Amino acid sequence: MVAAVNNNDMAKKSERTCAGCGRTDTPRAFLRVVMGGAIDGEHEVVVDVGGSSVGRGAHVHPSFDCLAKACKGGFARSFRAKVRANVNELVAQIGEAHDRRVTGLILGARRAGHVEIGTDASCEALTRGPVLAIVACDAGSVVKKNEVRRAAAEGRAVVWKDKAELGKLFGRDEVGIFCVTHAEIAREIQEARSRSEACKGREER
Ligand SMILES: [Zn+2]
Image (spheres, rainbow, N blue to C red):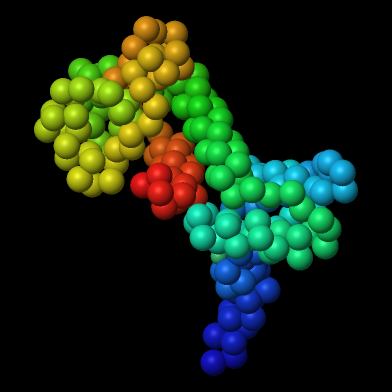
């Protein structure tokens, strides 16, 4: 009984409050933002994807509704300052910040030899073990391959960017599919993608 109470207290202490809906949650459930520079006395809101930026911070659920509410007053209350925040601009900034993070994770994985590029190498990797497939939105017939369909059904595939943009990551003209074979990096990529998608406006879905 005593141990249970202590655990509860510890969990409560590490909880954060959403600047949007006002509900408490564990830090992992949130996006962290920090107060940026001021223009005409109104501070910008800067998303902190790595969770390490210095400055006055606030937490907000990665959801359009929570971001919209926070822009209307929650961030100003958290920062105790005037805030210039537009939800659509913030969602765009969050998308770009997460894209940069995903790019960094992929390039790191590549340097360490944890990436298989192209249809044949990807399908082989997907057969070998639990890897993450990253598929271009215009990948074409590769998405009909059994290995890719199975990966998608099991939540081991994400659609991101197009063939030309994925190609640029690896110095090629076009890449329709590649796999990240490092479990922890794959998990971080999936988390960044799902957070970024969760923040998008309803009208964009
Ligand atoms: Zn919330």
